[in-house]
Length: 310
Image 1 (cartoon, rainbow, N blue to C red):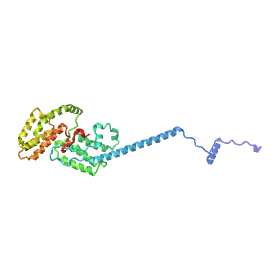
Image 2 (cartoon, rainbow, N blue to C red):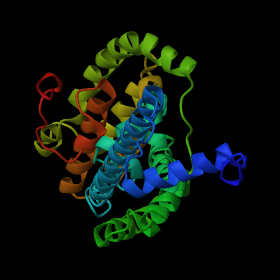
Image 3 (cartoon, rainbow, N blue to C red):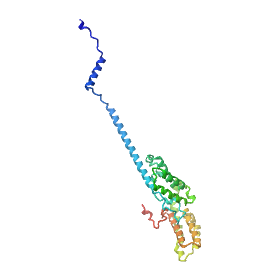
Image 4 (cartoon, rainbow, N blue to C red):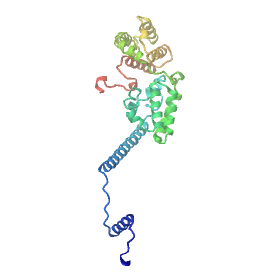
């Protein structure tokens, strides 16, 4: 019979497509769940990025704050006193650098390794200029001190009007310095430092004995009262110098003042007030040799004892 003729077979793919279209139309489809390990990986990645960003931001903030500290401290780096000492024209320039800073300690050569990670997080140009500045002071290198002071003054991260003013004061002071004081003296080797420490106790004893014999000659009252003539005192000082090797114990600074004092005593036209100044300067230099005073305390009448400073 014609109505019972065989029907053409239906393609299964067409049926599946029709069913999927119907599900999408009715909204009955369900997304397949994301595997848990994918979610865990995404969460871990986001957490790591947040942590890394936070650490970087903290490092940048510390570097910014420390740079501000360097800038603030360099504003007070000017010489003290601001003018050359009229009573001691041979005073070396590094004794005018009395200001100590926090960043100077961090940039010290022996502490570079300890502070390496922190220093590497700062601006490389700033690190180079500031570290070389303090190295120049350590080496007593006047030329590099002025050079890197000018470099810091031109660094936009460090520049300020106060730093520029301090740089100009240093330039004026350095012009009054003898040429040999501007040259580098270098940094003592560990061997020399160790040798200096080993002989410190014996050197102190020898100096204390020798300087104790010289001190009565430096009493200005004996000359004011007429008990001693200035020229006679100068001769007795020369005798002291060559007796028992006393002259070998004087530091270069004390020896220079020793000569200046003798010259003042030998001049017939020298005023008594000027002689008193030279005598006082020599007594101060002897105390510095003994460690009773620090070089920076030269202009202080009555400095505090060493054990009360800490």
